[in-house]
Image (cartoon, rainbow, N blue to C red):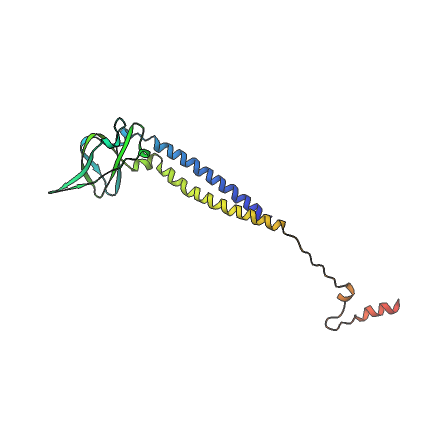
Length: 202
């Protein structure tokens, strides 16, 4: 009975945890889907330079009037006679934002500026914007969901085990020793003297 009660308690908490994680995920995802690219852009144009920070990732967009394949972008730094390209072209419609087409990304390994050249006007945003706009909520929802799923499995196992135990047959053992035998003296097998005296008087 106790196992069943605990099982139902864990089941309720697990379902609640999963429901909360889904709600938090949907809120965070809706915020990410509504990012204002133009308002959060650290660079907008088709040539110039963009300020970057070390160990940061940046996403590049073009106006949705253009297809991803129509855009040529170069984000680079010149070191003497050498040119180091940082931009990675990537067409992924899932990352498109309202009015903007995702065309790729780049990572920085230093604090400073990078040169930008493109055949279309582009916008660059710091990927930390996603965390500020709802990405953090999406990440928080993941452990809540995992805990809920684990609790759900544990609760089901407890409820099933408790049900099996309640349906198992009960075996009762009845001691067949008579009251007279219980009065026998320990180790002698003889009746006590007071018992024999009562039988003589009768």
